[in-house]
Length: 305
Image 1: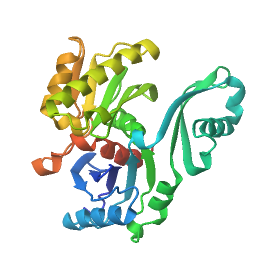
Image 2: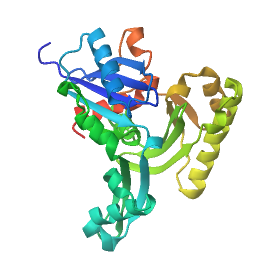
Image 3: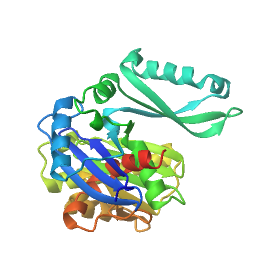
Image 4: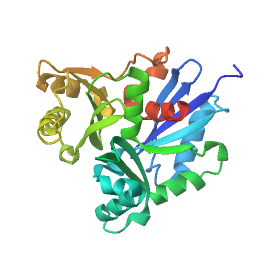
């Protein structure tokens, strides 16, 4: 057991921490859980640390190799941009310039990263631009009293989900992933090492709606975005739609969405994976659907992505 290396992934919610503990040697998810917080943990690092520390002590976790954090796309800036061939040699400057455009010149308030998806210097490159608030990154880096809890990495759930699908399930063709949370829905069309389209569905219209009304509205919104992705992003018809997140644990919503998808498109709950073992104990596996982002970010640091 002394050679066991444990990796902890954390997805920061609006009033929760979604956690996933992975064993590198067995390539297994040992535990998943949703830890409720009274305030937004990304804005209140004291609450973040207190709740996390309590859960780790409760589960007897003292030696974790690395902790990684992922932030929802709707609390970040995520853009797929085209860098022209003449700008590829100075791609860092180009991406910084682009961030300045979409933040009205406030780019210094953000930590910027990017991932080249496709292309080369002769034709230009397609890049995934990602930016998060600098104050959040600084708080995660400097705000913890216990240095053992300081995250090794911070990313956006789009990258976490891409890594989860690649490492845990393998991607042989273009697939759609839907992360449906109460505070927003993120939709990705991806293949290995490439993001073909990224779309979001607002959940603001669900305020004060019954669960049946909310399920209908959200399912319609998702189907509309799937139609637009084909028309505007030229994504191919997908045979499989993978779904995770808080709403994926609501049977009524899943049923509504399944009914609205075409007969040739199968809706798959992301509660099992080809290349990743899951907890045997029911209590430890209960939140797997809800913790896909946390599992993905733990895999990122575990696999050295």
